[in-house]
Image 1 (tube, rainbow, N blue to C red):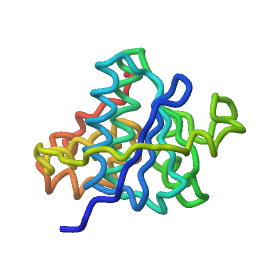
Image 2 (spheres, rainbow, N blue to C red):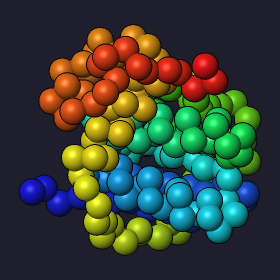
Image 3 (cartoon, rainbow, N blue to C red):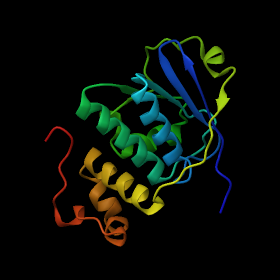
Image 4 (spheres, rainbow, N blue to C red):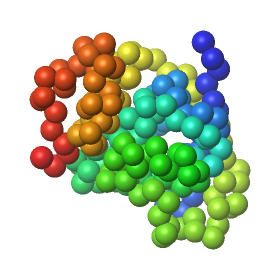
Length: 176
């Protein structure tokens, strides 16, 4: 199994800054999800995912982001801002409908004009995770389908292989 890409973090202004360095995959996504959930339990609600050093993302990684956005919307607390995107990563996020759940390259935020400061002195996260990888992959893909109905056709085969009930038409979008 490949080594996970390092993930770095710190508190910047009022935001929790998270920076994966390397491709965002099903290996890194449970680490970020667990970190965000633990940070929320400690009172954090504003998160920045910095993708400058992340050249690409798999569907599980983007599904994890969708799941976090859905959770924030459902609980009416918290937000995610995605920064440092390339044309390719930004297009991938938007193609899957994530712009409805989070801000992608927002024009406002305490990091605007302070990107070097925000990216300085980051601390590497402990990337030991337990949990059921297959369940994480399934949940991530189900969340993508909740984010945008068009994703059901894109990921139908994955959902069927993993035993999801969503392929029977039971999916409902957040807020529906």
